[in-house]
Length: 248
Image 1: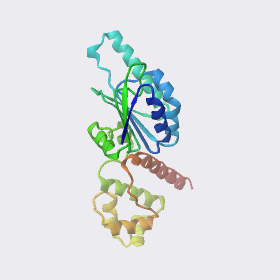
Image 2: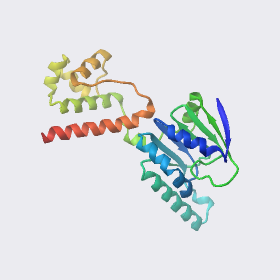
Image 3: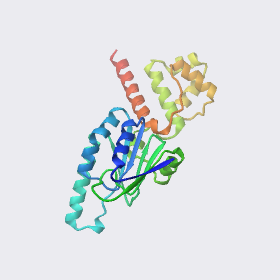
Image 4: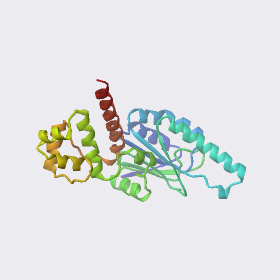
């Protein structure tokens, strides 16, 4: 299902989509201006306040096609707009040589066309709104829109066994359990516990279940776009628990 909008009626529908976003907004706008960003600022700030992950991909300024004065002016504008968005918690990614104008919302809505969402002024443009998860997945893959540098840096990325072992070790320490005590509690040998925490052991589901039960943990598969927020909350929760234990 898709609808075509022009520059006159695009923003009314686009604003509504942003206001109804639940988890994810990805905007690829090769160009950005302070005027347009200021107009969208309240809606984007509301998204962030509702814990909607907002990632922006914009084009790096290429010095080859500008005078030194023009280049300096474009860099200043880009930095000013980027700072404005960063100040409300939006992720900014500067990418070379991009032209497509795209917006993804919650894995089921894709906007694509000729209008720069973060810089439009007064030209005649069109945007197509697709309500189709297949179209969204295709755009995400084709344009590398899942590679937000902020998200990748913040995520618990890396070897899955190492991540698993790290979480287990932290939780065990929060509960003030030695590896020996934890071994006795779970029925898993202390050597195996050590290997798990060091990311050297590939656990069966039955063993994971036993370990999680002993630690008061639950395992849930989550959509990829929720991982950033959940990892952020998990990291903060673990830090808070460790601080509370150390102060008591």
